[in-house]
Length: 209
Image (cartoon, rainbow, N blue to C red; front, side, top):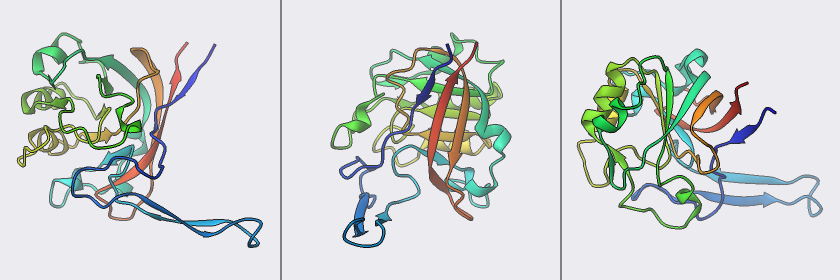
């Protein structure tokens, strides 16, 4: 039986954001019953919750989020589970034989943690060498289950530069806690923010077979 997994973190008040970024604010403007219709105003950044990083996020003159090819954002995706407590190393990825994959989503101990309050500074991250490996094997999209693929406090952002600099799309803030490793049909649709460095996205996985 086909199963559909929504791996998007809900946009709700109190959702953790990257330290220093403005918080998510959902402000009611009108309410149905009190007005002819309900209306709310959102205050959020392009990297709130489950979101897509376009190359422009770190690469001057890079591709903007509204120009990303749908062929990259939709198609077969592979969920792989990494047991690392602290960081994802190149060796962890080499053991997975990713050369025939275009889209890989990394499931770590962080899946589901964005549903808890506060940014976890000790989150799992991707080393620069591991990120270079993912770009070298020809991946077009890499998904991760926390708000940043880089180690908190590393202002050089090696993983972002390695992937986005190679034109690899990065999807952060996924919730893969209810998804077993395997192959899925993935749909990842970021908001079409003109010239945007990124955008919140709805990401859905559909089981294959």
